[in-house]
Image 1 (cartoon, rainbow, N blue to C red):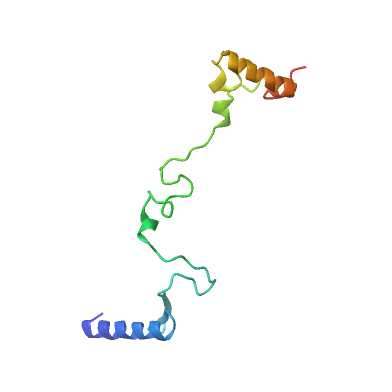
Image 2 (cartoon, one colour):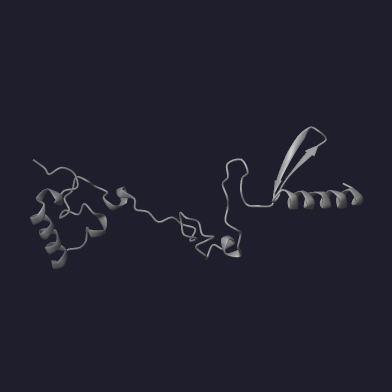
Length: 129
């Protein structure tokens, strides 16, 4: 696009945006129409975006952070197979891997309390016959 045409095109688009509340359609040689929109919304479905702010581009800010990882770059989750590697064991036998080596009185009392409330709850699977 030459300098003179560029200036005329720019002026025409600015006028179209002003007269049409931010929308302009450009007909390219009768072959294809292009819709330009100065607003952050879709004229077809009506979906709109909030105004852009610098915070939206910062991983340190909740506005710009990934909703899955919170901007940390990693997703925290529990893998049931790592927590309970052998579901045939009871809780007392060490079914829950992080508790397997805990033989403190407190831990045993906690398991006894759990067993008194719901005896079948001390097994990950069904209670053995």
